[in-house]
Image: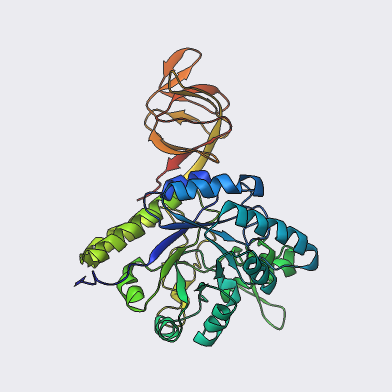
Length: 407
């Protein structure tokens, strides 16, 4: 079955990125990227974009024909107000295309600086009256709550004038719109301030009222599968969705590259009237080889059931694993050779590797290894080697080997 909706508005594809390398990985596929600074966001571990680097980062986004949205979506406490002013001033100076916010303090201060405002999913907007309320405050777009069905999204879109953005892919929080207090309660690290330690991904035990422990054979009771809506793009477009949001501000650039490319291909197929299941399933399978916890459709078609939980694993369901190998210590451009210290694993000719850093992302096969001026085919960890590379790498870039496991 194919769909012919070539006259429909194609939603914007917005990818989460953590650094310049991730930005470069999706520049050929995404219409926009969203990112955060090293503070006041729900991804406090994303430390690579600072206020000092913000202007140059946004310039790079615009140079590649994309829009850039800055997430300032943490809870704002009294002590944060001064820092909030600094962040928003930097955002205005850097010409970000919008600030993603939900705390009224952030919304008010962003509006005072004439910044465009997108309402974060943290606001849990679940109806058209709430959407219109935020439009009355000056917001131009709202990222709807993840707990809505497709029919509810369609109803909201029909009864509001604000742009609608929805999550279509990536990790799902087990709490309502990410408003989780479990990490704060157990570890003193608040998910609402960007420090979530993901206790929902832990192995849990069930205890009965009489103190007996229920044997659940090591299952992960609260670990939700990732969202994946690539098989339902026609329904999303029909609902009037203006923008697709892909979670991933902490994901590696390889994930960003693959997922953005697959969704772009699916959107292009829809635009061309050639969208059909036989062409979409291979794209979904390709994404399943990247980091994931299994796929579900979340709340789009009703309340998630047992099939939406990843009982059998805590983190990565992909058969393809990234194994840390070592670190680049030098690069010799005339020879296209990187000096690499093998700290964790050895290497052999034929291995598939990824070299990754703040501004570097490259995947290639190992073709030549040099050790003590000799060309060799294999070497153990603990040695420093010369590695022929296909592109520029930088000191302190990390080297990973791709282990494809059992296919």
